[in-house]
Length: 275
Image (cartoon, helix red, strand yellow):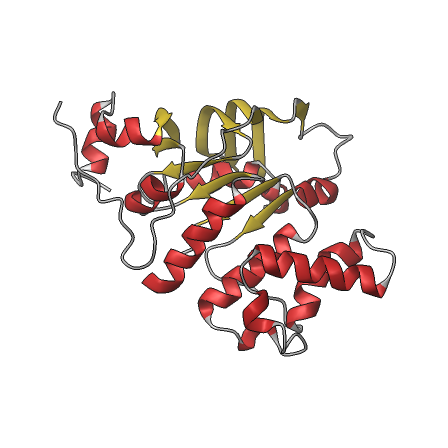
């Protein structure tokens, strides 16, 4: 089996390679997860462990179940009528689908960043303050201001917006809006960050900045990213899972999966024979 060549260099900017810091213990554990939308089965017996302080990339062709699986981790499928999730999904050893788990509280622990930036129709400050406020994480205005500033700093946005916090979040560029959404997600101090194609609507410069941010954030969080870009997966992740037709075909260390895949379907996909 010939080893495919994947260009791991970003189009612009500095490559976001893992620099220091070992992956932590398993943060999310799934076993035999299947998802049904009515009579249609979208996911079939998916088992995957995702480590703390590491990035797991989910790759595969459109419609293969990547985003469906991602939405299982914070119970977003609960909001879809007729959806059913079978199997076990554990966060720190606790089954997230038991009745005693509040989905709202779960989503504070498991933040999500979507494909297109979706700032609230509020000021930059209020976008970031929203989560800490509704979850009662701060007790004073000054404490809330500190939380907002720290979240914007960790998202690499503070220096660009510090003097215009009262302006609308939608006044920012696309890349800035996506970093604002990331700041909003981390303001509630989550444990996991889910990212569904976070760079697909961004230009190469903004993409490089988001990738660098992902590499910084993974030092503190468990990050799971869905991406159609295999070069992006190679740049930012430590583990990659290849999905096809609702199943995981192969899981492995990112470097190993791209240079020496064990399954023929994986090789065919990453060399462009389908997908």
